[in-house]
Image (cartoon, rainbow, N blue to C red):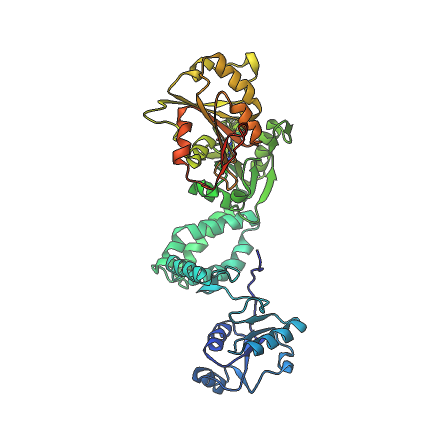
Length: 480
Ligand SMILES: C[S@@+](CC[C@H](N)C(=O)[O-])C[C@H]1O[C@@H](n2cnc3c(N)ncnc32)[C@H](O)[C@@H]1O
């Protein structure tokens, strides 16, 4: 972020605007909405500004800018059509630590002004650090059409009610639930649609009843949402997952949850990392189960966020058993599992009428002779096999497939960091898979797909089409 986004209270604060033309007039109109005390300095004024000056709405200093005019100013805007004057104003402001905006010149500006959607007291500001003003205007147009016209009335009503709600509901978490219920519920819908007058007695009575109900519930029972975060691309989150992330008091998350997904969580939700790196178990499964139970018993809404889908090699079942044993309410939000996400983003259809009529997901944690994987079944032709957690066991997997008759030319693909901008795909055959994976230094998380469908990657890959061909015989074909 290049600029720190803030809303500045300017009511009754002195602001200097240098320039008396159309551009200055637009800035002044905006400033006046905040009740700022505007002084404009310019040799002359356009008519609309002259009228405001005559009516005493703004103060007018006729003449050229003088640095003394900055004395006591909170903010300044340079809006003349002379670059040298604007630069002079900016320089003088910087010397005095007065934030300055120079119209259409971000180099000289200490602050820039966003595109806004004004549903006061709700104001949405959109900026692009000055890189793409047309884009921000487009976004503003979309927001304009999307945000209800009466949003401001609803916000004003909430503002009026806040002291009462605070007095009646002692706990912050109860208040938050009251407000969520209020904004999602029928009273808000009626105000927004105009069916109810935001200032009317009808609304106040309905709110009073709702408050009384909330006040009777001294403590809320905690609950856990077991949520699949998908393989990494935040665009693959479900709407339900997004809602759980936004509603949670606490987010308990794993190593495979991407930073981009976590970014979508409520800013002030507590975050607890319980991730495990291969061979380095930070928090045991039992401790994680106990933590979820403890947090829920404290009355918290917990979002247990897991990479991919929580029920596919995610130990989600064990966590739910622990919650069920304690009578804690839970819900499960499925996620896009790594196989589905990685295959889609690598252009590998997991089934295909010509190549694969069966599909199996297997854990690669299959150690030596003692594993109970049905290798003979996996080795059959016309079958796609997806190995999760298979990277460290690659040699063993290849050896077991060979033992069970998989031919040397059976195609395979390793997908590293699937669905993320850093995704890489290594295609190989059983004959050279281990060698190519080593040559390409594939890292975790990576998914192994074995089956003829992986040959389609070459023709169907679409994501990150930047293709890196590694020429040496032992590094394989790499597309990133
Ligand atoms: C413990 S399993 C969790 C699987 C997860 N529950 C799911 O449904 O995708 C972890 C394995 O999933 C695979 N995996 C998860 N995310 C991945 C990604 N973005 N790219 C490649 N493989 C991934 C890797 O094989 C990794 O070792």
